Amino acid sequence: MAGVTAPSFGSPFLQFGPIKALSLEAGSDDLFPYDTEFFESAERIVFLSPDKASLNILPKAGKSLDIRLFRSPGSFYLSNARILRFTGVDDSLDIPIKNDFWGPELYYRIEYREASSRGSWRSTPLRMVKTPNANFRDGRVEALFIGDDHTFDDADMGTKVVTDAAWRQLRLSGDYINEMLRRLRAKPSYVPDPALDPAANTLNGFCLASTLQQIQAAEKPDFVVILGDTNGIGAGYKWKGLGLQDPQYGLPAGLYDDYSRLFWIRMRKMYSALTPHIPVYIALGNHDGEAGWDVCRIPASKYRRKYWRMPGAEGGNSADENYFSLVWNQNGFGAGGIQFIILDSESYNNPYRLPQTPGEWTLGAAQRAWFKTALAYESEWKSVFYHHVLGGWPFGTDEQTSDYAYGRGPLFTAEDYRPYVKSPEAVEQVELTKLMQAAGVRVNFYAHDHIFHAKRIGTNAAGQALYGICVGSPKHMGEIRWYEGPIWQSAGGYGNFGSYYDPVSYRETGKPADFWGPSGYTKLTITRDGARVDYIRSANNHPYTNIPPTARVGGIVSSLIL
Image (tube, rainbow, N blue to C red; front, side, top):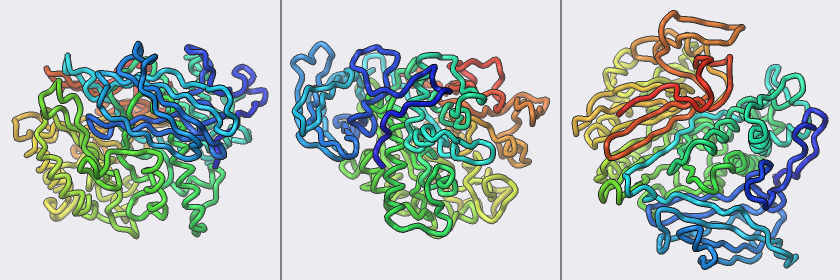
């Protein structure tokens, strides 16, 4: 399960050349996000509270490193920076960083060398991280939300088969994202050529790489939230197509552990362009391996906590770090700041099967009690995040199956559920919505349905509008079979898709679109004067979307003033 050693590609890649280890020449267009000779992935920084951060370093398997961490409140102080030293690091290293010196920004640099060699030191670039009070003077917070990148769907299925051995290994490791990022930096108009490039059969990865490139080029968020369905531990039906063993008939327990480790490190590799300088948080999705019915849930949880640390029990959150509350910009928005509550919609459901009715979806008693406590915190602005609503339509992945309830749809209130269940008040989402209204929550952000859609749910106790917003997806292809479903198009669904541009299955409703498919991410901007939500196109995925061809990458497809 070690990281990929830079392979030399065949003729389709001659225009780009081999993967290179990190160059120390700042500003090089050929930079890989991390040194592949020494590390499994780039480092990852995350704020566990307004006054405490954690920096995780992940040495490459088989390496033992000496590490020096230089940190300061400004780049000009780095010559007199505080230095932490570590010797013989050969496993995941978490370094706590307390707010006893940082200002609006935290600057740091890592120096490293192989412990056995005592040779010359290498260095990462200087990193600048916005702290939770970065914009306290102008009272501004910017956050980005990425839903359902579904890179595990880049498995060999149908006609999308990768035969190139080097690219198969890069796909499995996750570094194919970083290689495509390198190509996009060299040529921003790059799109994989099906006639020459095996990357053309891994287009969800291409769209994620394009999304990360767009974020790096145009955004300066305080943090990013991934709203689930990204690592693929809970998508065992795709493992065989990724070159792993098929879990259909069971696997040795040790393989579940190995695969869980592989997929979490894979995700670290895929998001290495962001993790060193932007805190990236996760709301668990149904394909992330920790749902109540998942065979990998124990090792998946173990390796998530090891490689993707989140706020935990020390801050009054879940000891398993799967649900938690973040507070940002306390100085800019009063003592309460801005509150972001991340929930786990998957882990506390039936351990043997998917919920069969909307009423079976649950947060579980402990998380529900914690949620009530979190909502009681007095903040200036509250929002809640989860992978999907705790209920949804009483159907499966699409409207053709009714033997399980998949959590699909924008259903929040008893009135929303009345057409589908006998006792709407028994659906847990109805109770959660009431709690949020009473606590003054402004938005429910969720993913799962791979589109951007905003619905006004009602009014909260402060007389403000409460919204449910599906954050979209950076993936390659929109699901036209979902869009054409009668419930999807009904008053309780998402409405009309407008036009779907795939030339083979071209569809047109003759009506304006009520939602937007991939590829895109959602941006939330909060100021003292109000808030705005934008859905931003993040990859050239035409013609497999209902986003108009005129919408450029980086352009705003839809906006909402809250």
